[in-house]
Image 1 (cartoon, helix red, strand yellow):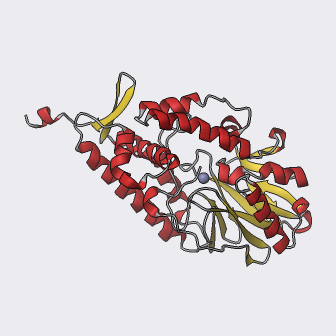
Image 2 (cartoon, helix red, strand yellow):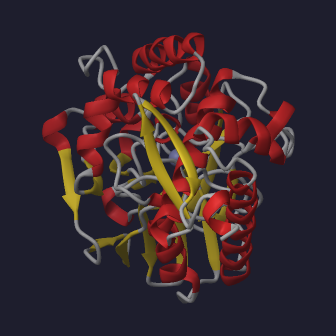
Image 3 (tube, protein in one colour):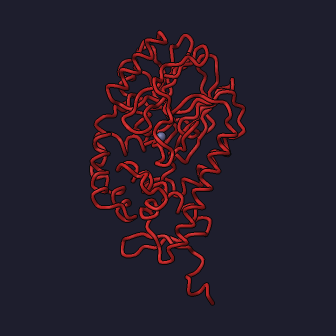
Length: 354
Ligand SMILES: [Zn+2]
């Protein structure tokens, strides 16, 4: 799930956001979210005689559906005119109404191959109810037991809200694959980091659909999970560099308003993560006998971890940084009877004195 990092405030989106015609045949419809991020964008793209395509589908609450219906009415588009659904990634605030839209229009869903597996494995109503691997990972990395227990409850609650598309209607795209819609060519671009098989789309008139890969005023959460690729922060650094210099006149983010300065935003995101990594390494160095990822998160974020969601997102973000630093050789992971701690990898304080 997307989050607002605890250090970046809650008021990043302007109040009274409303549907916006970005240019002819291209609409942004913000829908509300019940957490700090406050809203997610659904984009509506003219598909000529074939109707309309949408990118992403908000969360699945009645308020999302009402906002989507109001936005479509504003754009004078009926729900059953939506003939194509793109999903940039399988986070709840992007997939929630896809099944509802599909039920009205029969539209097929397009997403990158393997992101579909994550969607059904994690978020379908009949998915593993124990959520065992994730809760075990939280516990091993220091999350307090009551928080571990509440994480499974929170996941079950989200599963009940989401309306996923039927499995046999999902068309899987590969990196670099193109689709023709409404006289334009759209190219799918694999952009891992925020999710493993996150997809951006570049339209051949230089409109860049960014999903949550690049956001205008907040930092996309990069977190490590048990079944995710092993080094998501390294993936993310590579994937933001990959899109940095694309020919782009408008960037359409998954949250917030469209913007144009893609390269500047990529550079700012890279610097943010580099600075965060340096702060993480400093704290690890101050704990020569090792520190858990959760203790580290508590030091880095302090009182800004107000909710259970904040604490879990901070933990997985710390894990992504720590595993990146392990890969760079600065930090080592140690398993102490099932409790994982991180230390500086070079030497102990005693050997350093020799
Ligand atoms: Zn997301």
